[in-house]
Length: 237
Ligand code: UDP
Image 1 (tube, rainbow, N blue to C red):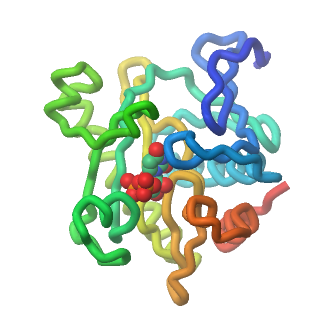
Image 2: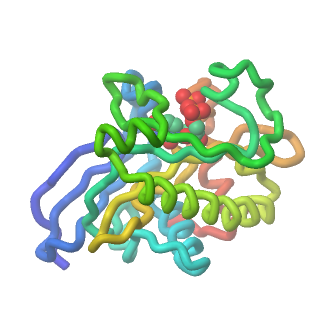
């Protein structure tokens, strides 16, 4: 597979065409953004850590029967993925209250949420990724009701798999965000799963091990991502 021109440069990843129109190369950069791109910094080793973290999780999800866009790792910072038509929605599942849920509804941080909630946000930095619902998605043609139902069902399936995985590493999967695309008519999990897009707390100390370390200026951001990976059995190069 030959890597060709850059197609798109996102906040933390760049996307390149390949000589096969069905596949793209994702390059994970060291750029780290928060607050809808209002704060951007470079964090040494972040690109390689997130690429390898994502590869490990995508393989685990595929083994559990979740179809993902991930094909294979190409280098410490790059992977090959399916070229999809991305649905402009973020699917968020929460097992515990944190972040915007606490701000919006006045719920105490850490409250257990049973059943886990499922929320949709529009991917739009200028608007601050507003929360939307299924009716908006249908009216504005972002996704059909059937597609939303499928995204919800896959997102909960991912929750079953990953809650157990992180629990085995003595961590709580507090919440996470997934994005989906359409590949040959099927809804397929895309984007990435890394500590940039989820919240993970140590089960004993409740220490934050994810991107909140960056958002809240707690330090040791990438060291913490690596420690999470090592607890799950990852070996970073
Ligand atoms: N999230 C994300 N990208 C976004 C917004 C949220 O990856 O643009 C993740 C975030 O890291 C957390 C979950 O989705 O794991 C829920 O985020 P929340 O709605 O609480 O927003 P925040 O507090 O991060 O603004």
